[in-house]
Length: 308
Image 1 (cartoon, rainbow, N blue to C red):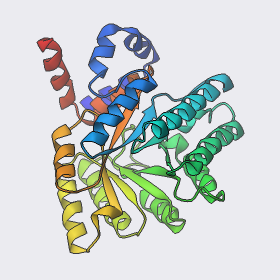
Image 2: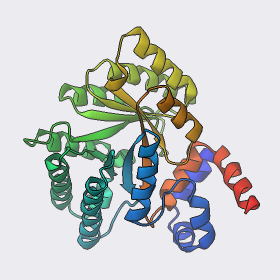
Image 3: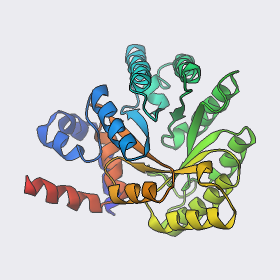
Image 4: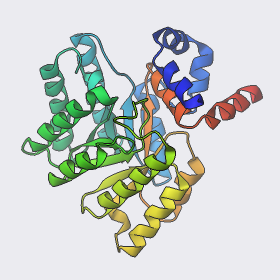
């Protein structure tokens, strides 16, 4: 019930406008969002690197309405890649196609993202662009983009995407991506989707996740397992041991501000960890989806606000 409410709230433009401009909204989002500027993201990334974790940095935003906004978003990502190199960070970037103008001009969006992937591939050391997955209206378009970008000479291993285990089509999508050795970030899914295209029961979503996780781990391609579910993490660790899969063959991926104890424990035990660090002024939809995934975060935030 609470999950459905928060997902619905994430789509409210009226509440978003109020929240993103309010001091209270900025205070409550600080748990999950590194800040509003590139410098904030770089500081957060450096802190994660110091404890032994890699990071993936995302400038929050989606569904831009004109070409100027899309190009400005891309320019910020170019600046971010420069800052990552200047500070010698173990960090890559994550972006949404609608933030790059997919709804405005598909050809323009492709050229924008192609330019970012080319820059990442030309860096020393090479960097990586994760094309994030959005709601189901964008699933096929996102996958088509990534397949096409990956086929560009010099881009192999420098661009990848996200698969959501609650989607009924996920296994077929994984098989096609693996046929071209494209890197995948596996997560459960954070959008409200109808039952005909997405599993609704947690048990079904978890079962799909574990099945896909094992396929990815045995693929010989480096993937990210995005989860805070300790049961699934234990299963992944046990599976790696049983199948003699080296710890360097994959990594666990987690969200900034969530289960820091778990992140640090995995690093301490020698497992690869990458923390997803979002930043920017357009944080509201992301923030509400995090509350939808784990409503207990609402009480955690309220408790901390009362302490201040």
